[in-house]
Amino acid sequence: MAKRVYQAWKGSNIFLCSGRLIFGPDARSLIVTVLLILVPAVVFCTLVARDLLHEFHSHNAGYAVLVVAIVFTVYVLVLLLFTSARDPGIIPRNAHPPEEDISYESSGSAAASGRPTPSLRLPRIKEVLVNGIPVKVKYCETCMLYRPPRCSHCSICNNCVEKFDHHCPWVGQCIGMRNYRCFFMFISSATLLCIFVFAMSALNIKFLMDDHHTVWKAIKASPASVVLMAYCFIALWFVGGLTGFHLYLISTNQTTYENFRYRADNRRNAFDKGCLHNFLEVFCTKTQPSKNKFRAVVQEDPPRMPMRPMPEPVEQSGADDRRAKVEDDLEIGDDILKLSQRRDFYGTEDIKRRGSDGLPRESAESDFNLGSDLQPPLGESDTRHSQRSESLGASPRVASYNALHAFNYYVSDPKKA
Image 1 (cartoon, one colour):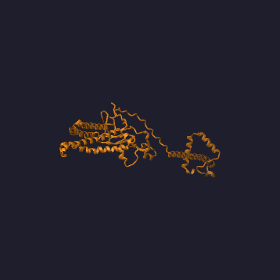
Image 2: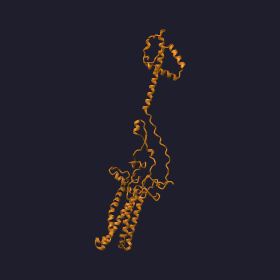
Image 3: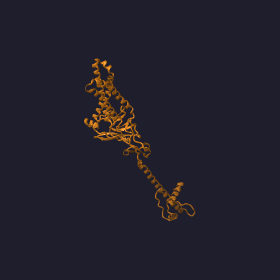
Image 4: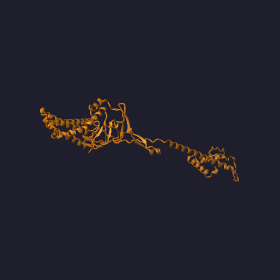
């Protein structure tokens, strides 16, 4: 059976309902968050709102407090589910590095030997223009892609997330472009719920003080109200402070990651469109569809064409050496040919110098220089030499043999030279 995308997912996410719900690897912390919301709400509805039913007996106003508490709690839990179970804006991974950005460089050892070996090299950082301001984008080696502006790789989920804000352990999910609106509505609604529970608990203590005339008797009459007031006061510092911080981020069109990472740079924000347009961008724009189809069948990658290796450059020094070697061979061949001519010439002159008694005759023409162009006089020796050459033939093999034999003859006896 063919696998689906969520079954072959390379990230650290947890999928439920056949890939319809996607959570982070720390999704178990979501249970703690649900209990922190649900338990105080149940205590308030059963112990505090029940007492308020008798205080607002006219027009059944006490039931309104109970209904608001229940609806508000369900609303916060639904926002929590939408935040943690939704794709935050994960960018699909590439199966191969982008070929249009691949360049080649020679390794150190290969460069030393004079034979460059091509190796892959991708620039780590590139610059793109956003609203006329240069913004650096980095290459992600895990996902094998250049991250779009405002994108970052989450080390916990092991995914590149668009408009990455942070990874929230309380919701067990990354906060990115597709779930940031739900996240802000979740923390702001939780803040309002804390304020509502705190106010109603304080109002119940006030009614009890009117009946018992002392604070201690009022606390003894409804200790749950005091516990809820203390709990909501502490929680308000966290969710309330977080809500105020994200209001500032929205007004300046920043993310938590950008605010902490680039705070000391004091550079201009390329994404700031003004306070009003920044709020409209977050709350009044349509959520983009997910770039991942988790329930789709995994498609096998088509076979890639092998990369053409770079042609090796012709080494100029090697060509020069070969050219010099050929020139040396030609010079040696000329010298051998001249030695062969000298041998034929002196063989003829030696016969002329010898008389009938076999003694050699001295000649003044015995002095000459090695390597000079010899012009032997025309005579009988030339006729014999030409006849001998014609009889042997003018094949290159015979000429080379004669030249080599002459060279060995003069090298073996330098006096004859």
